Length: 355
Ligand code: COI
Image (cartoon, rainbow, N blue to C red; front, side):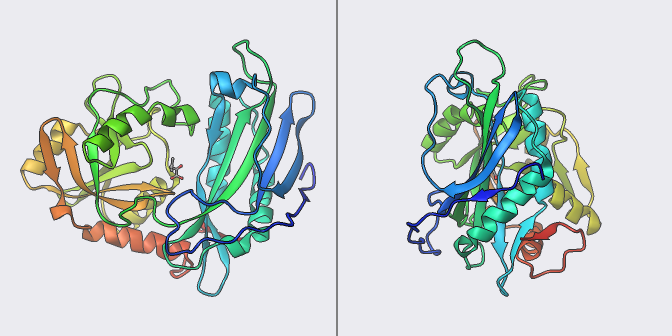
């Protein structure tokens, strides 16, 4: 490790929220991890400090040209009070992939994992106990140099904050209603869609607001060239069970490579269920639906876990999937994945890392 992580503890601990009504991303723990980068000395001064607002120069490049990336991960409490992380090295790798796309400096993956372990150990009382709750981990990196010319910043901050959470969707495991977006696009190949870039999410908000106004929870994005092929939901990758096979769009540059997506594909293949990482058009999905072949649909993500999709609204079509009930395969995937994450099921894949 290049520098030891220093710890400054707060003398004002907050009251912890009731774990039965956490919602998502509303509460933050007592401490955060911060580390600075400058072109002259590289990453330095890794530290854990009391959770507090950050001071930022008004000319900081992130505020003008949006050089910002983030990650999402969770810590789970087992029934015997161990704290587990799920494939954290994958988040470290993806943070560096995102950093490279936005001309930001890479971080030492070992230092990142050490920062997580140190911060979570200090905040372990914040990992909620109820099944279905967890401590959401939000690492993010942004440009801090005060400068108004358009170029990569020469200084950055990496920050990790922690938030005890329940389900991402207000309805919990109730199947979500999704609007298939035909007007706006999320990402195009060669752009930043494959990276966890904050601007991708900013660009999705308008369509999401329009969808909310029509009674949908989320937006399903189509490809930006032909407006035809299914890509992803802004906070989840998507899967469709059609005639006994599972389809999910391939990672070809505009879709985020979800760690839950990868884990679900592993599980399905292990169970002998064919997974087709192939382009799927909305027309073909609709034809399968009209023939009664679309058996289940679900989204995957760290925040969303495995979330059933009950309705797809596409142009004038209102597609009701599996009578808006959780499908058998969706439920099995949710049960197995969360069983591994909460240490209830043996982990044959080496996905779990104890803090
Ligand atoms: C996650 O699943 O962790 C995400 O980052 C999605 C999100 C934007 C809430």
